[in-house]
Image (cartoon, rainbow, N blue to C red; front, side, top):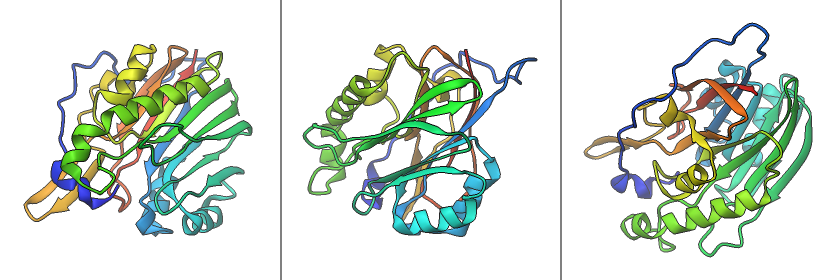
Length: 260
């Protein structure tokens, strides 16, 4: 995410955890999901590719991809991930899904929402546990249309709420569903819409209090939790963690889950 919002980033304390990380039980076949905003300005960056590779996730959701990122990722990880789809939008609006398992459906959802900047990628993956629906989100940054972070901080939460309501309308609620990516917020807004719809925020549930975004300023590093993995009641999370890897201003978030 652009450096203009750095001066206004806020960190929120995590609520008391309601889940404890656990190993898969006998008979469970966990899936690993990675979400990562790779930073469009670091296209093809080797540490960024390594950050994806080291997790060996079954499904990878990326934000801020572009044609340069696509070329490097296909060359480096194409054999590991035979099912890859990229959608390019402007400088920072691209997204991608990389999967070890077939994609049975893939849509790019534009938002008929005033002030929305980026589309959302919705994919259905045919995993060994059955079909799982994933929404790869990159919601409106807390910037005004003129790039003002102070005004944007106070005026864009409603945009993210509207974006998420639009996403929910487009999802097949008969499928186990995960919404993950760069929410550009630590709480409220779109996250509140999902909570009202019965979804659980994995970072909050496991008490993850680590920032997923950081930026160096003249007064030191600041950060916030902007990247989330949120899921409905048919997803049973085993663990959520933030990985110290890559050179993006965001860090990868990894979730190990089983489908109920």
